[in-house]
Amino acid sequence: MGSHSDHVLPEPITSAGREGLAAILERPRETVVGLDFDGTLAEIVPDPEQARAHPGTVPALAGLAPRVASVAVVTGRPAGVAVRYGGFAGVPGLEHLVVLGHYGAERWDAVSGTVQASAPHPGVEAVRAELPGFLDAIGAWKGVWIEEKGRAVAVHTRRAEDPQAAFEALREPIATLAARHGLIVEPGRLVLELRPPGIDKGIAFSEYAREQQAGAVLYAGDDLGDLAAYAAVEKLRSDGVPGLLLCSGSTEVPELAERADVLLSGPAEVVGFLAALAERLKRV
Image 1 (cartoon, rainbow, N blue to C red):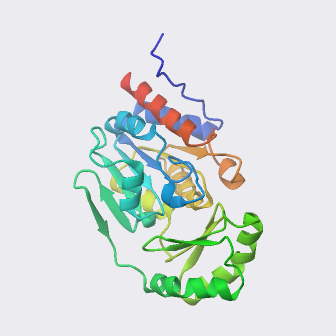
Image 2: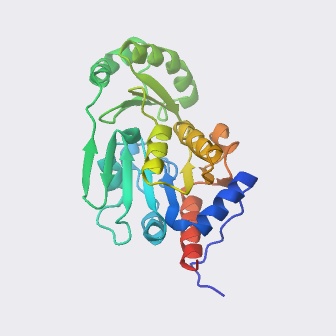
Image 3: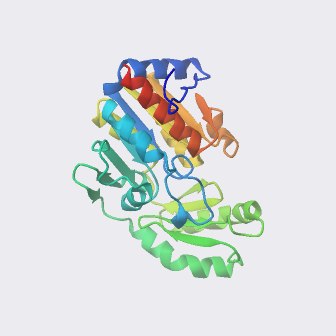
């Protein structure tokens, strides 16, 4: 039988997913793969600065990327940070990797090794200055932590005494603050992100898939921010482009799990899936 590295490619639970996987296996060179970073390729950790891609990520992607049209990491993080935490730069086999950072406002590609970016939104700067005092004034400072994301700013409650209660208590005040500065709030797993409107993972991924003239797509995500990318894949399907949706860590965000074609327990299984797909495509 095969080597110990053989991974089994799970059967999608939906007919649309089975159709998507069949199309990917038939037309790998026309397939665009989109992958979220945190919670999908990297475990969720209390301090986002400690997040690193699962050790199997780079080998799996280096095996897969040369066999498909393109692999794009679609993240809310700055593109350069995702490249660093992922270990994606200068890796043989990842020449066609692209990182769409800040929900597509930034783009790093392995070929040039540089980041291209659009101008930042002035509201982000204003919110950044106001947030510490704002959280202090509403008595929400304890255990709540601000993450600087360059073109966005995020408030985490994972370290609070009751993380879920802190998250719920902050939703409305943060939404009010964001609206005052022309920003929107993207809720996630115990995090509220304030960022400019008109950019999301769905817009970023669908524009990229269109640019690559994708004949099939795959998208893997784990959080509420990935719902927009799920919707983009569903739209592509309705336009005749088959697609496959993977959900990483299917218990925390039921909205995602309900729409996924393949449910995976977290980054280790996502990486296993990508490695299995690369192995199958070697034989195509």
